[in-house]
Structure formats: structure tokens, C-alpha cells
Image (cartoon, rainbow, N blue to C red; front, side, top):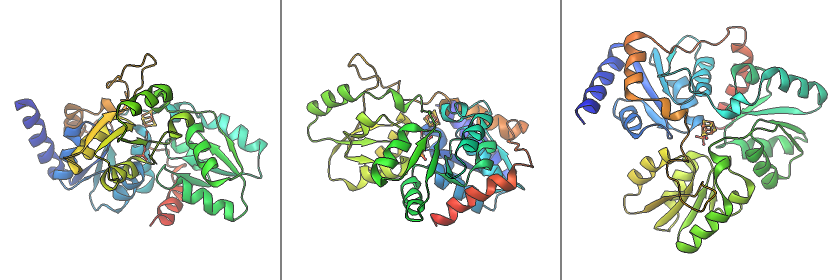
Length: 319
Ligand code: 13P
Ligand code: SF4
């Protein structure tokens, strides 16, 4: 506890000294989430992290999340310094979608509008017509469909399929997945629901379709937190990274939140639904990036204007 207090105080001082704000994702260590809130930064989903960073007057943004979130912040604010506790924190969706392979697929389908999930590299964003997050993917695809556009979707096939089922849009999918959400198991989730018949099931749409089919609410991290607040149930089974429990419990102190099963053996494995890359964001690394200037996010300046366009389009659309 003493160590935590030391880091929190030291990070707070460093943020002030560097005119910096801490922008954290809901999957980060609760200690970082609370620190971000207490020091004038924010804790948010990936869409609102992007918006907050671009609107902030701070000179330095410290992004506690994964690489694509730091890159998005830099692309939207090329003149700000963007630091991350570690640059090693990546995402299986980003890793599984190299730009040269995606470009080859685009060349085969020039008539399709390329819509990419925010969980991608700057180079992939620079190729895209639209960038979306799970908060706004449905409404953006709906509007493209109303325009008669056919879509090439990358990289998350589960989110893509969910959007297609909801909208009926003509979509071609890249074969990518989130290694964390892909582990949720529908059969074990049904068993758990039988044990807690009054519970509502909350599912992030990066999960397999059989898991999404059991959901009472499907949505981005912020939308799931909203559902926890607004649904009348007192118990919730939650299929997303366990970092989200901090905010849910804080906003709904009288409700009970249970982790959805990830293990194939029927056991609930609390430690499984945890993104290994998000977990790399520690208090110590956060302090070090500020004191030593380590972990500065740099994006190829040649990519920035092209990657900025679809990101700004997304922010404008969702204003
Ligand atoms: P949100 O946009 O819902 O915050 O999700 C980001 C993410 O990486 C989910 O795994
Ligand atoms: Fe990527 Fe999944 Fe981790 Fe989100 S939880 S950052 S989608 S690997």
C-alpha cells in the first residue's frame, strides 16, 4: 500500500510538471484508472480516449492502454508528445492485420469501402476510408449501407459478423480475432446463466457469435458499463476483460458482477479474461515514462495526414 501511495503521488507530480494528462482504458489496472480520474485525465473506451486526447490542452498525453490507442492519439495530435508506459503493449487484432496483406485484398475489391476497426496500425488506418470502434461501428455501417456502399471489413471477424447480422450490410471480412474475447465459451455461459437465472449477460462484440447470442446487452466497454447502470437486474455476468469490473462496481455498488466463463472445462477462470497487453501498464512504468521520457509514440509523418482523415471522420460522425 505504501508503494502504491508513493507511485500515485509521484505520477501526479510528474503529470503536473510536464503539463501532461493520463488517458486510461477501462481494461487497465484500477489503480491507473482512478489515478487518471483524480488527476484531470480520463478513463474511457477507445472512442472517447481518442476524443479526449484530441481535445485536451495538455502538451503531453500519457496513454495507458495498447499501442493502437497511443498511435491514434499521436495521429490526431501530431504536435503533442504521446507517451505510453510501454510500447510493447500490442493487440492480437493489430498483429493479425499486416498492411501489405490488407492492401492486396483491397486491390482485389476496389469497389468496396474499407472500414477498419481502431485496433489496427497507423499504416492500416492510412489505407482506410473509415475507422470505427465498437461504440460506433453499427451506426457508421448503417449509414454506409444507406448510401449503397459495399464494405470490406478488417480485422475483427466476430465484431464484423455481429454488425452484419444487425444491419444486413454487404460485408467481406478479414480473418482476425481478439485472443481475450475469443475465449468466452457459450456452453459454460449457459450453465452459468442457469445458476443465476436473474442475471443479465453483458457481452463485448469481439466475442464469438454463440456467446453474443446469449447476451442481454452487446456493446463497447462504455456501452456495457451503461447497461450495468440502466438494466434493472442486480446481478450481471460479464463477458469482457475483467478490468471493466472496477468501473462497473464503482458506479453500481449494490450490484454483483460475475466474470463469464472462459475455460473450456466448465470452471470460471477469472484470470483468463484479462488482456496480457493491457496488463503491461503498471504504475512503475507510468512513472518511468514521465521521468525518463521512455515510451514515446512516434508515427511515420508520411502516414499521419492519411491516417488522420478516417479518424477525424469517425470523431465528426459521433459528435
Ligand atoms: P472499446 O472500444 O469497447 O473500449 O474496446 C477496445 C478493445 O480493445 C476491446 O477489446
Ligand atoms: Fe486487443 Fe483483445 Fe486486448 Fe482489446 S482485449 S486490446 S482487442 S487483444
